Image (cartoon, rainbow over all chains, first blue to last red; front, side):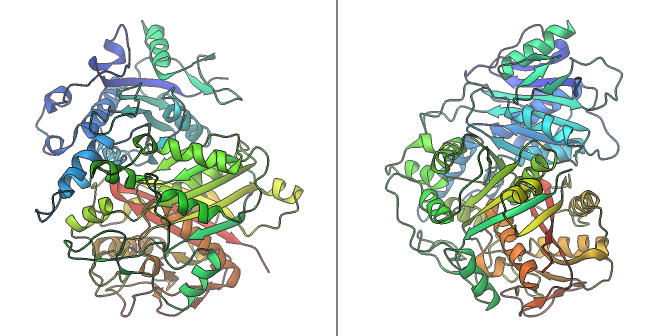
Length: 238
Length: 376
């Protein structure tokens, strides 16, 4: 059975920024991620980007690269595409940064700008605004270590007919020494554009579907983790 | 599509440790919004919230666990193969507070996956579960997804558990956004001045109609429609034209194959902030026209319970349909400007079988759910 097509892939990981059509290899490890700057993502000035914490920048960059890779970055009217990301630590790094502005007693009020980024979904909202995406928007968490929950959830959403396009992926930042002991084996942001019906002319990276036991399959082959999925997609296009 | 039944509900709110108590106190117009004792709120302009009383401090453990124990105490058996979906915005955020203050706390309990693992073990479920985080629409989207799982035949039964704590972390943030009403929130009132925070939880057991019938479970009501949409307008402020909420409601109605005239009442998000309530008024006006549909918000009674809000409101909404009564909107005295619907400080009768529940949150997220009551 043929499922949705992978139309675009984008990421910002310890290796830096990347897109599927420019890549020869891929790895999403637990290493530190350098600060994302606006010039990494957008050629033009972007007033909001500079105010975002690193978690939101990483996520927004990966969504932007995925849409660019799919030829879907530019838009005129809002589109009913959804966005879903899995995460283990969520925006914990932002939470720590924000809560450290709450702690001082008798000090000034904590940062409202940072607080608005302490929901793990907020960068999805930023992406929805920037790219006119009006579908379902949410974060998923599970206990698996394969970083595939976002992709699996998007495939379910597409199969249920909730929308025809989902931007789906994973995001995690190492929470750092302030809160040790939370592993993030798939650090960085990575998103894929999944379409029920391929609308652009660029070739895709194959199709995905769910096996009866819930495993993600790429062109009919079961995939164990997100790294493997991306390598399979890139290998197919080269 | 399989019909989706809700067969059991439970809630814990500031009004009471169970749904019966919450329901009775809601009908009486009571509020649980009161001076905070959970943490020192003295440095903030607003010092009221609704919280669950007498939760035992858990040492280095999150208060979420005694809340969940209270929620699940006495909750009936779950069918074999039951799936687990949870909804929360900040989960065990109190552990982060403890760790950053230098108090005992186990950071490995901060990720939501730890709570999922605990719940699956506590309930004897094989499914490790998945959590939905979608700001204040988390529960509504979780229930919608659970309904889609059952409706599509991907699952026979799903337990949805919704939860969020009152924490200084969140309270300080809404305070810094100047979003809290020092006197307690007044949804849809002309003099509304902000929200009040709350904490609580809800559990909803959902089954396919066929599974419920096979097990001889009568059910409480059905989820007949759901929809979610992003307004793609602003991260913290709702779109003034309510475009995202209108889309979500229309998707829910399309899924249910019913029109606006068939919806008997609305349980709105109704946070009591100037912009949220105005947005909802505009959105419902776009969907329902000038029809004076009965509408309420229970946030004046139990506060805004964040990711748990939709779950609690659905549990209460099912009771509303069963009792044909919409609870009053605590704090409401005088209708807001251009109010096209009927909001009451006293209970309102429901003349019909469909209730619309909606929630909207940061990130432009809007979600709607259509409940159908069982005919008497």
